[in-house]
Length: 64
Image (cartoon, rainbow, N blue to C red; front, side, top):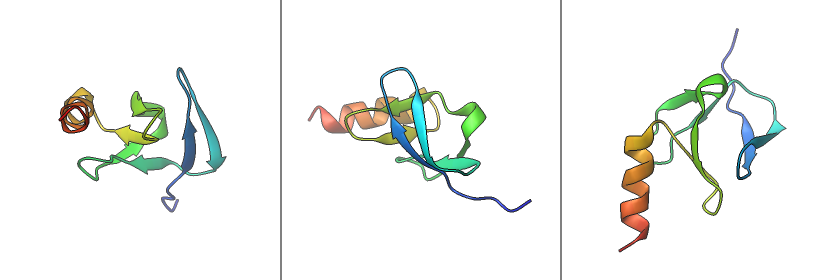
């Protein structure tokens, strides 16, 4: 099975799949995030994060 990056639209409590795929990339670390494990994202920036660590890093960067 080949891996394909999905395209998503992030909403407040869910995301919509625009293009099918099995993963997205973390906006901070570049790590692959399987869709089944995607728990952290920013609706305003339309970015996904691998973990709360990366989400917090983005929060700190945007609050400067």
